[in-house]
Image 1 (cartoon, rainbow, N blue to C red):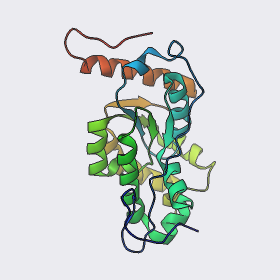
Image 2 (image 1 turned 180 degrees about the vertical axis):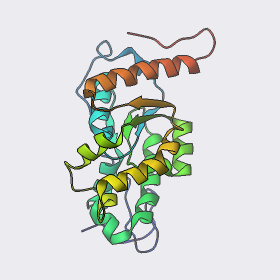
Image 3 (image 1 turned 90 degrees about the horizontal axis):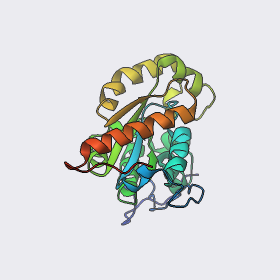
Amino acid sequence: MCNGPPGEHADSVVSAPGTPVFAGASCVVATSAMSAEQRHGLSRELDRCVVLVGLMGAGKSSIGRRLAQRLGLSFVDADQEIEDAAGCSIPDFFQRYGEQAFRDGERRVIARLLHGPPRVLATGGGAFMDAQTRSNVAAMGIAVWLRADLDVLVKRVARRSDRPLLHGGDPREILQGLMDRRYPVYALADITIDSGDSPHEAVVDRIIAALETHLAAQAPAGEAPTTP
């Protein structure tokens, strides 16, 4: 049963009539304690969130946890934040309130998380499609698109049944349609990483290398990010 009742709240992320209030709960998943010396040198240069975007099945949560561990940062899954705050699963929320109410809440959750300390943030597949969320990420984060081909996505999503957008149709056809619509928008991310069927640690290695390159390009003349 989703939380209620509907209404206004200073920290709410959904307040449209007929939808529940999401209090500003936080379920940050802390990584194992690491000393400053053990953390990857890159973490000392990050002053914003690393935001993982991409379709369902791209590996945002599993890769995000490993990336956070390597960087000595906390990890947050935006979908989990929404579920914890709403008191119900995302499929139940979709069924009861619809996709638009979910997207409104998702936008506010991500905006709140971006205002926190640097961390690794995994977002839902539709989050980056929202223009305001893209603007917020551009201002307060580094967007990393985890790109995967159709065969990889189909294989991965078949392992779970909690994908509302895949209900009522052929998953392969639905995913292809989502790719056609969303990949041009995902391409606006700061960094693109092909996840494919590579081991997750190899993908993390590529993300870290790309982040180092990105930060070096953003650094003022005469400065460069610290390396381990």
